[in-house]
Image 1 (cartoon, rainbow, N blue to C red):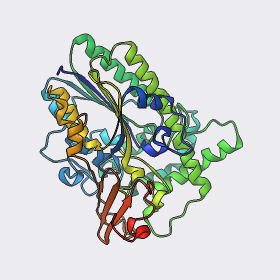
Image 2: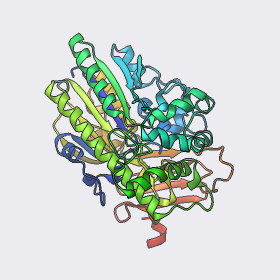
Image 3: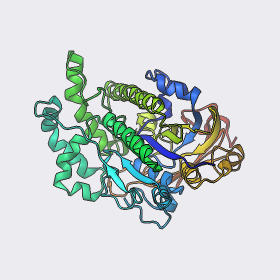
Image 4: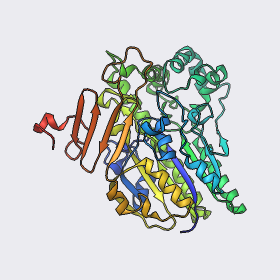
Length: 434
């Protein structure tokens, strides 16, 4: 097996449920993602190991479950001794680089960027006359309270005044810059003959779901857009502070639809960005010796099970994610077996160390031996008025047809074939375990 380069693109917060190729209702228009289902290795049933960024990424980087690597809401750090995939590839002579403006990878959180030799953070600047700057100014106190009250920020983020000021820039769409930089690394490394591992977390589908190529605001071309531009920061900051985990949470159907519409538009824009990246990389011959992985770290909720964002859940709206691969030595195929995104660690390691693919999810026998995907969620312990249902660590096992969620009050069993939305446990409709 020849040594290959690796480009790993994670579209943060992209759930399978919102893609037409996965049967999504009222899904956005995504011709490139639809094309990948026919021209790439497409895993139809890939599941994340956790419902939010930090633990899910560390699971992909180490191949471990959150309970094994320990990086989650209750620690906010990876301090384990298991080497990350970046450490392994760096030691194997690869150029290793992380490219993202996602603050999870800014070096503040211990361990998550271990092994990456270069950390590139492409950010779009905010002009003085940018309408977004005005919205930020009007909403600044609320935004600061959000950063101080939510667990999605590390304590060092919340105490850093500069970060509080600079964070707003990270909300502006900048993945065109990130993907452009990835292409530059690929071209430069190809000329030098240096193998490379590039990990890029794409952030433009993430909250606050930017609906325009260069702004988090809708075009100011209608009264409806004007009303949304003024209202959406207040709705977002409300759900961003874990309000949906507290008693009495309510959000209007109109605001829910606004959030979902923004999310779907952000997906459409991402689809176009990735199509341009893929086309340019193909024309330049950069994928001839490169394993390209396109996936997500977790999904997103818009009222499913009473949840929003990505928190408090092992439901499929958060765990079921797309997974596509371009492999220079493999034909395209659709794979319907259950797999876990943490298995990507084993795959990338085998590519870098030139091991046989029979020990990875590309092998049917391996998938048969590992026919269940495991997931966990470790709750945020510093929210005093959280509902008891969410103040517990939970686990899930996903098989070809069934899913079991283990909670402190007992287990929930779902038949995913007849109940893909997981709206009722098996006991509720047939009186027992299937």
